[in-house]
Length: 313
Length: 281
Image (cartoon, rainbow over all chains, first blue to last red; front, top):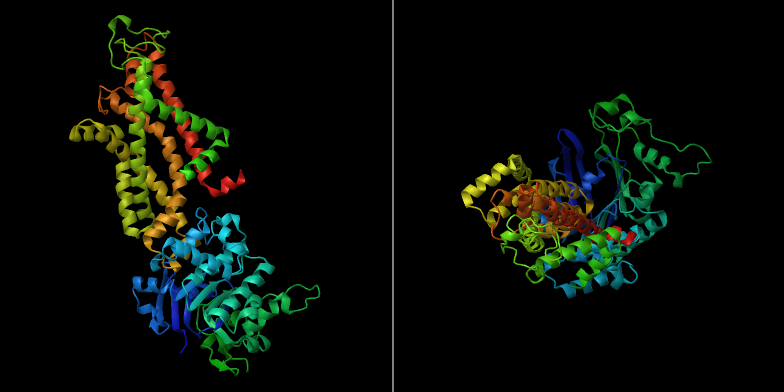
């Protein structure tokens, strides 16, 4: 059975839809990436799972099942119990994920209050956890204030915090965007180790294809509030099928020898109103039919599929 | 205790902090040791030495009834400081609670609390004080309630504004994402982050509250008319200002020193409590 099953999830901010009928499955121990540009709805999807959407957002339809429990059917208390036990989160900017005035160890300790662990045992567990995520000298670091630690160290500690709950799913929202490239590689490596060691499933949100390619087993590409292509990382990166995915990869400097030419961009602005394919206005392959009706899902073999009327698999 | 000593050490590093610590220590010492230090009883009347100028036997001279002003100022320190500190602490505690609830709680609670606080803040202070005194009778309790009613609206608004900003921060979201109990989020994550601002405002307000306390005792609404405080010395001095300025000066100088002392104290305490400025020093 899959760990997380999202079916036909739609979320709107007032009248403005942010997600339209999004379906996604995460198996136990699987690392799934969601990639897309700003405003594509990837963060909305991530925050909808633990019920941490901002007050203005409203789930209009769909189902989110985590470990067989229907999350949208739970009340606030029930959702709160899921958070910090079955699902934990890692945020984008480790510098702001911690209160600046409280030593990090004490903040992690607060995460254990629900378990009624006494202070000494909690401290021991936190020190072990910090050592596990590769913090050197954890006995000393545990009493450090956030500003005394580097971004990479803080992100490690944030991951340790998420692990304290022994979750079966970690949702990492742009976990390396605020970090430099070497630290990024280390953090991604750490996430992978955690999956291998604890069997924790990880949902990684990112706008960087490189991050996704580095650690994910499967990837979903989002555009304008819908998933437009989904598949195993290998297959999707080798044979991107959706015109948006293709354009996105063409923009990635690391995947392309640019020879001093300008980096390619996708012309036009993100838009999602009206019927038909959301990408139609920016798509080089678009024809009138694309704007008329919803595009169909096309299989591209081996769990790889994409949402397009024009392209052949 | 260790913690307090470390804080004092940090405050001592800056010149203003040093001045603040010295002045506050002196005031507290004067308040505690007043009965031992005062050369005369603050209420002993000696009509033959009315309005005497400062001299060796009476350092700050005497007032209209021949009472030793130095003794009155010393003993007055105790009543003044005690009232001001208790009232400020009570106001800060009430305001922190209300501000946290208003800032973090649901919208309707916020709207209701702000309405109440704004209404309270809109009342003219003297009218409120007179009404309360008429209802409750003069006394220390009345003074405390008046000061709390006067300070809480602005303090609570300050706390609420800080909380509104803080609750958007990732660390609060992170705490929620880890199912940290509401009380722990409020006390452990939000309270430390609002204490700094509240502490500064409160310590600077000690002077305002002393002045308010002074005004109330001038109106006969003070704690106990037999125990002198700086307000009484000032109002006595004001009545005798044509004869001699020493009385007003004797009442005002401690007030100024207390204002400076508590302001510097508050500022350096805030710096010492903030791990970021602490590291910068």
